[in-house]
Amino acid sequence: WVRGHSGHAGNSRADELAKQGAGDIDNLANDMPAVSNSLLRANLKIAITAEWERSWIALESCRQTKHFFPSLNQKFSRDLMRCRKRAYSILVQLVTGHNHMRRHNTIVEYSWPDMEFADCRFCSEDEESSFHLLARCPNFAPQRLEYLGDVFLDHPFKVKCKALIGFLRDADI
Picture 1 (cartoon, helix red, strand yellow):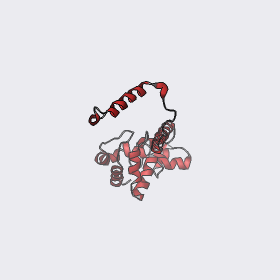
Picture 2 (cartoon, one colour):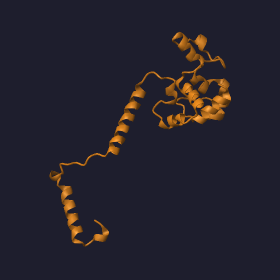
Picture 3 (cartoon, one colour):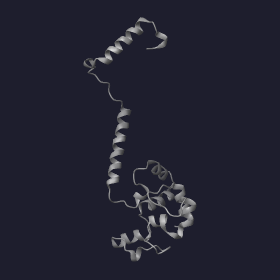
Picture 4 (cartoon, one colour):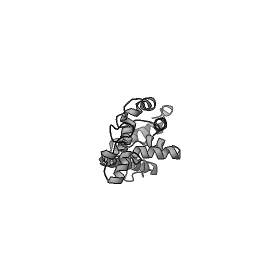
C-alpha cells in the first residue's frame, strides 16, 4: 500500500493479490532467488571464524600466547600487524614466549623449563617468562602501573600494543 496511490484500482488489486499470495503456501514459486556472492562470502567468513575460534580454544598448547589471545581478537591482531617491524618482532616474541628470556632458553636447551636455570634474573622469585615479567615481577611494578594501569596483571591481558611497547622500553627488557 502506498499512501499516494490510495483509491487507485491497480493499487487495490495489488493489495488483494498480495494478501491472497501470502496466505497460500501451496502456491510457492519453485525458482528461489539465487543467494548473492556477498552473502555467501559473509556466511563463509562467519563459519570459518567460528571453526577457528573453536579450534583455538580446544588447543592445549600455546600457553603463553593464550594470555593475550584466550579467544580470537582481531582488533589486537590488527594493531599488532600495524606496528613497525622492530616493535612487531619484539611484541611477537613477548606474546608467543619465543624470546631470549630464561624460561624459553631452558626449554630450547634442555627440552623443559628447568627452574634452576630459568629463574628471573630481576627478582629470582619465579621463572623468567613473558608472563612473569609482564604481569608479576616486582622489579617492574612501577612501569606496569604507569603503562598497563596496574601493579600486577591477570590474564587474559587486555593491553594495547603502544602500552606494551612503552612498558618494554621503560623497563629496558
